[in-house]
Image 1: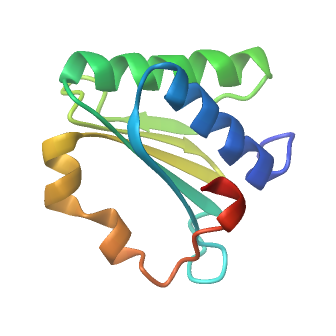
Image 2: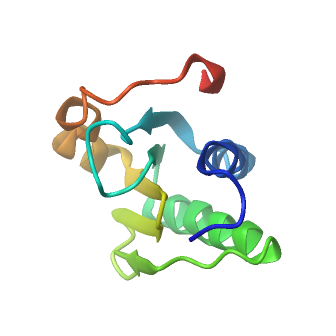
Length: 117
């Protein structure tokens, strides 16, 4: 588990994504609709290189806080990288993949906290 509150960590992840020019960053509170975690952070990059850079930055900044992911998926292809931080699950998509999978639609029952917008 992470040492800071999940909401605070999700906010930090958003900042780290913004630092690498990630686009369309959205945080979804899934705590009431899933046991997977408390928050999804979803973002896009415009190329495989940018998607990887965003994921690397999130991982680097989290490690500076002593937080390591439970698992990482998709690094090789860098079309959809998932970083699982237990209560906060980070999805970084290539823009085309994000449109195709449309996680926001699948998790429409989750709430979008206004503090994140």
